[in-house]
Image 1 (cartoon, helix red, strand yellow):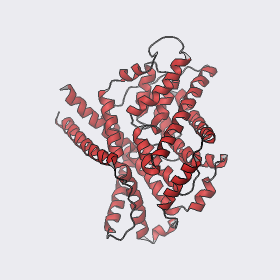
Image 2: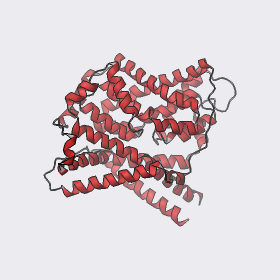
Image 3: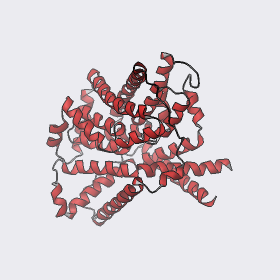
Image 4: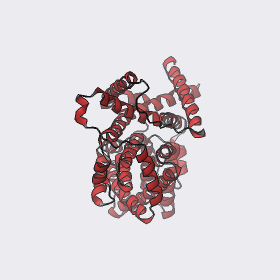
Amino acid sequence: MEFIQTWADAALTTLGFFWVAFWAFGLGYLISAAIQLFVSRDQMQQAMGGGNVKSLSLASFFGFVSSSCSFSALASTRALFAKGAGFVPSMAFLLASTNLVIELGIVISVFLSWHFVVAEYVGGLILIAVMWALVTLYRPQKLIENVRSSLEAGEEDDPEDPKDLIEKPSLWRKLGMAYLMEWQMVWKDVTVGFTVAGIIAAFVPAEFFTWLFPGTGEEGARSFGEVISHTLIGPVAAFFTFIGSMGNIPLAGLLFTNGVSVAGIMAFIFSDLVVFPVIRVHAQFYGWKMALYIAALFLGALVITALIVHYGFALLGLDPQSASKGLIDPIERFEIDYTFWMNLAFLFLSAVFGWLVWQGSDGHGHHHDHDHGGVLDTALYWLALAAFGWLAVGVAIYVLT
């Protein structure tokens, strides 16, 4: 009976995670679609085509004001890179959009403390700077050029004028098509990733994750070896608990309460871009070689940044405190708040785009096929269907008990 109830909790947790993130997905995909449709390659190259401080600053600012959802940030980053943004500014945008956004700081203040809010924002800037330094040390120029050429070959570079949206209904249809294609690209990964996250959150006790980190629960200062091990284990824990940068914060609060070091917590939080679903989407966009390079780049950068933040606190004599309130009750995620209204808005927008595309589906419209097939895609397809079945049964259990 306990298993049945936990099954229901897992399903509700998954749906809650997705409900919290849905509007962010929609916003990111809308931005990506708009970039594809309205921005020319020349315009993008002038704004963020270089690898200088100006380009990085612009990319970081645009990331700061964009969505905090990892998947939507991936789509926006691909659109920027395909349109001519430099590799380093594109990666800076991706890191900023998942680590420097305002709502992430608010959640961190609730489940951790203001110390970690400072660590997140200052650490996010350090993370971008370290990433830039690592790319300077090793930059696979030929690989980057090949990936860019491949992306440019699949992109139109005859931008539309946004003003024409008033007079051209067909332009809304093109925007809707680009928006829906972003969803088509990742629905399997999102479904499986969020379902697994819900299962782990419900079935795996927090004590298991604290057990992973050596020295948790012990008194006294941590050795350098323990701190290093925490920065390496943090990404491993995040890899198996992929919930996204927002959803992982409650678990980060529990880990810190149970004695995980600042370095381990920051590595855990920063690791939302090195989990398998994200790597897999990168592989869809750029190929596996580039996806693995980006993952290694981000992993190296986040480990170094987590250590800098940890010892920075020590040098300043700061002793971060925990304000952890435990994992959020799944039902609380569906409260009527700003997320509810934002989700309604993007549900309506998605429905309108779907209707426009359906109305124009006469077989003559331009279509990008983002599903590359293969064994992994087939496996993910069936896993996604199984996930839908798991969620349906879990919700039915909740309703009937």
